[in-house]
Length: 196
Image (spheres, rainbow, N blue to C red):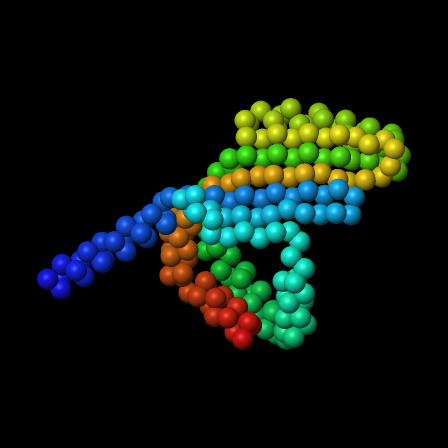
């Protein structure tokens, strides 16, 4: 009886782990800048369940992080040690980056810029150059880029909205493979020592 319960628990845990690895996470990001106002949000969902949502800007959190950064002091030798160990482990870390890029799938990218420079001629040249590139980038259906010139004043406003899908199985496999290598383990211990 106890063995049956244990095997059922192990089976359920394995199924949950497989679901986390193979069912994609959905990442949404939206930001809008108009004059001096900046606003937006970042959101992470899994199985349509919102796991995380952050609004932009988050002033209270930024102030706390600034206080924490002021409190930490790193010695030059520790930073150089981490840098040396990073360079030694670099060849084992690049497969993780490749796996991360392969695991991302762009669902939507919307970018609308409103550009203006001090000279109308410069505005026309820059917008013309961007307009010449946009048709190539807009060939892929989820990508929609546009630029609106403003010849009256100097400005850089716009809206960016994108959604990504991220599956974890490739990344976890590359991480597990990298952790078996000694330079990567030394890098992890050096970073942990730096953060203590």
